[in-house]
Image 1 (cartoon, rainbow, N blue to C red):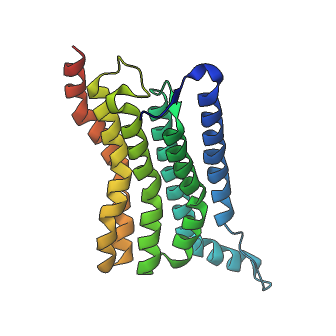
Image 2 (cartoon, rainbow, N blue to C red):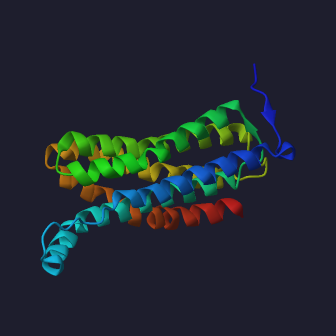
Length: 214
């Protein structure tokens, strides 16, 4: 039995996007709480403050990285929903799971800041970072399969390119987990492959995409 779908005329998609943008914004804002203003206990404020600020540099870089992760997922979410014209219960649940783990990113950031040199902490961080991407892959597969929730004129090349780009982040995070047995920092270094992979995949797919449109 086919699942019932709903059009955009009842503003259902608007509500889904409004909730999604709110959760993404909340997560990005909450990340700032991972940054701690150093407490100075002695009278040597100038010297001690400089030392403590230096100690906070790794945490600041992790904050920037987490901000980028959420930003990448928000851009991917925006890209996917720009093609979606209808919705159903499955799409709503997939989207809610995406948002649940986006809301968890501040916890993952704090875990990484405090225990970034501990294997189990890095493995958990990679897994938690991957789940929103995995759910985006499933969401897009459900929405684009047989053009169920997307425009019937959307090309198969566009569908494939969107899915390829959805796969980048979760694949990098999951494939980085075994490298934690070498050292947790190796796993964290691999995560940065996400940044160049996005434009590389887009560039490599562009000729096929243009050819399919002709």
